[in-house]
View (cartoon, one colour):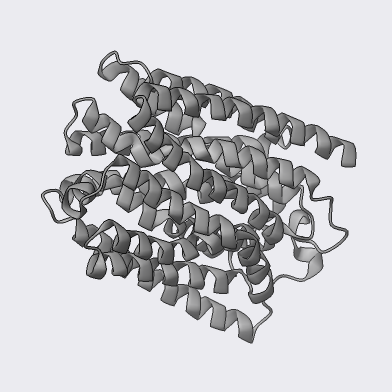
Length: 391
């Protein structure tokens, strides 16, 4: 398989792993009004989605290593399509929405192991930094598409957006299925001498640093998913219309996509100190989240959103590259461990954020997320030192 096809499938797998929940978050003002729940309910629904993703992440990583990454992409897009279609047909309350999101959460469990194994197996090591940047750009690209969809499907037609996304997911699933069939007729992966270094079989490195990185990911993703899940409703709370908040989300997402691509490009040229860069981005992103806590008009909202999406949520690609690079022989399993941490953070973060809004205010909630990103940066530095000792 060509590197371009592998990267395209990795990109689509990552995007559709989170598509159901980000569509629900983007259309939250319409969903909460029609289905009858509040910010706490939104946080609980998002939290359940990521909690279930965390629960199945490690088994999903082992499954992808056994069945192959193209089959993993097929599973991801197929389950995402089922969850999206379920929302279109069945969602008439918070409970039915949450059940459909749990179906979509199955896709989130397999999306990252499949995408990361595909990149590690097919794309040369010298280009993997950019490849992981492109792959992780799928997340802000998804929120960008959601932001652009808000004005198009405004006025109570939100089910149409879910239906379109489900249809495209089915097409991607069929494409992955044809490639899976073709690979089974030929050699499924390159011979060992052709493999990038991170994917070559051999002595597995200790997993303890990966566990610490998973803890860092838990904290950082708790902050990032709160940003993605509540940014639109926060903008509306600050006086924007849903369409204006959607346009701002789209702008911030463009910055996030650009940042991930740039970071991946620089990683390939620099070739080292990737985790140091990750920690620095988390620290800078925490400043953006702190700006959102200021009740001082639109300026802090725009600047905080740009910094939050551009740095506080753009470390993922470089982070994934570093995990795979330091997990020789088991990239999908290591991804599953980290994904379990990410799922835990993504589950707890939005729920805690919603409860903080109800108990105190948006300002307190945003300050809490800024502290989480600072703590994540510290954990990344600790993990880097552990990795250095094992070399």
